[in-house]
Structures are given as structure tokens and as C-alpha cells.
Length: 339
Image (cartoon, helix red, strand yellow):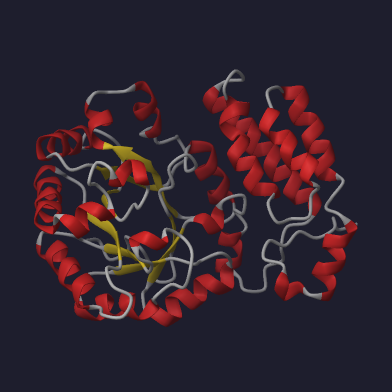
């Protein structure tokens, strides 16, 4: 693996299904993200050239470092998918052995593949390594909260199969994305391997990202849900004194993001596709419930203008007072526009 694949302190934007498309990646790059991934892509859908899947695999002209992540279990399908990716412009191919989503687990893929059929999971990984011209990495989860041995043993097998880097999410499959992150298990994996280990889990702002790196000893970390509706997390990672967005910057960021969404998806679909991301922007930032609810019906440029006008008015006074009096209790900070 090139030594600068993930430089020291790198905050890698995780592949998140339904979110990390071209407009999202373009947005986080504006705030300092240097390493990103496509959404998780089903290997079978890529092989069968589904229109939606091919859209997921688009790079974008200003992408910078971009990895593609596959999920799957059938060896011939994975081999063919890797061969197709060889003709695409990506920097790394990642294999998902960590997703806990029911629709993935039902097919015995993601973390369930690693847990229930580790031999098959390693064989699938070897298939990708053999077929790919790109460095191949893996993303997985811890397998026990107190005993590092199962996770270490599995990651060593991936290393021996050719993994150039492994990302470890520090929660069990059953916990999805909640609860404590078990830094010590990630650290044990890092200490046992001679390849880079990327820490994942619980990075919701710049400070928690730095905690993730400090507690695990990993050189790089992965940001996932902490970036949804919050591209400023990358600015916070780069500069611990960076201010939160003010209302003017917040509103303008949403406006530019929506311009990119319309360019990417066209006006017929952009507003529908963007609803979940817009809800993430407003979540926890002091906007009235009625305004958040209105996003579920967003369907036109006029409706977007009304939304942006309301956003530009800023959060409630109660939110701003709480932010001023108890800033440590407010996870998603938004301040008044600077005069």
C-alpha cells in the first residue's frame, strides 16, 4: 500500500448507503474531507449493470481520492465486479464485512458473513485481491466486547489474504450504531497487525474524532453518521478551534448542496432524494418540528425556497439560550449569523 493512502490524522468519509453520493461528497470536500467512498454497492447489481448501481459508481470530475466499496458473497460475482471496477477510476476497493443492516444480514453478507462463515468471507476477500488492480481493503466490526482474540484472529486472516488496510467499527453487530465504542479492541487489532488499521465508531464531532484516534492509537479514523447534515465535522477535525456554522453559512451550504442535487438527479427526483439529508441538517439544531416535517413533502424549487427562507431565520431562541448557557449539552451547534 502506498504510504500516503491515509496520511496521519486523516478523517475518511465512510461509505453510507443512501447518503454518500456525488453531491454529498462534493459538500464534505468543501469543508476539508480528503478521502471518501462511494455508497456501499452490491456486487451483483454492479455485474448486472443496474442503472441505479451504475449511478452509485460514478466518480464526479472533482472527486479527488475516492474508494469504492462492495458487498457480496458469491465468488464469481465478486470476481466479475472487481474486473469491472478495474476499468473505473478509483483509488481503492473496499470489501464490506461490517454492515449490520437486516437486508444485508439476510443474505449472510456484511458482518454476518464474517461471523457465521469466516472461511467463506476470507475466500471472498482473496477473490477480490486476485482480481483487482487496486489495493483492496476491508471494513469490519469487533466480534467481542471484552475479548480481542476473535477480532484479531479474523483481521489477521484478512491481512494474510492481502488486505492493505482494515477499518474496524468498535461496536458489535447487535448494537448497530449506538452504545459505547470499544476502543481497546480496535487498539488490540492495531497492535497485532503490520498494516494500517483505521478506527471507526462514535466520531460525531472534531473532539470525539480525536478521542477515537487517541484511545485506539490508530493513525487514521473514519467518519460516518457524524457527517450527516454536518460537513463541518471535517473543519473541526482539522482545527480544534474552528467555530460552528452560523445561520448564514448553514443556509448557504444547504442551498449549494441542493443545486448539486438538481444537477445530479434532475429536478424531478432531486427533491425527493434529498429529503433524508435535509432532515439530518435540521436535526438537533433548534428548528421547529413543523419545519422539519415539511421536508417530507419537499417537491419543487418553490418549496425549497420557502424552506431556505425559514432556515435563514435561524433556530429558536430557546435553542440559542441553551447553547449559550450549556454549550456542552448541545451536540449539533448552530450560532447566529455574524453581523
